[in-house]
Length: 189
Image (cartoon, rainbow, N blue to C red; front, side):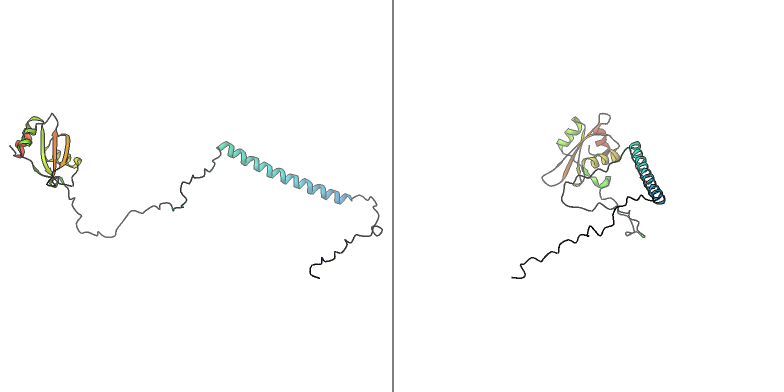
C-alpha cells in the first residue's frame, strides 16, 4: 500500500565544483585585522575583570568563614507550620468588676488541728503537729500556711488521705521550735 512506502529523499544538492570561484589567497585588510584584535582584547579584559571579582568574592568568604546552610534533619513526614508569636492580651476594659480571690489562701488550707491521743503523743515525742487540710492543698502550700499562721519553721510535711476522704498532714517542726508551745498557743492542750 502507498502509505507504507517510504517517501523518496531528494539527493543533497551540492554546489558544482566548477562554479565556485578559485581561492586567491587574499589576506584580510588592516582595518579588519585591527577590529578583530580590539574585540579580542576587549573580551579578554572583560574575562579578567570577571575572574578578579570572583576571586575577591572567594577571598571574602574565606576571610569571614563560610557560613554553610545546614539542612534541617526531618524526622516526620508532615510539614507543620511554625508556632506564631502570640501578642499579650491587652483588654480595653476589665471583664470582671472585682478580681477573683485565690480559693486556697492560708486560712482555707488548714481546717483544724487533730486532738486525738496519737496526735498528742506525736506533739510531745516527735515535735510534730497534726492538721486536717483542704483536699486540694499540696505539701508546699501546707508548709506555707503553718509557717505564716503560727510563725514557726517546718522541717518536713507528710500527708495522707483518710478513709473518710479528708486529708491529714503531719507537720514536723525544726528543733528551734517546740510543738508543745505551738499547741498551747493554738489551744489544743
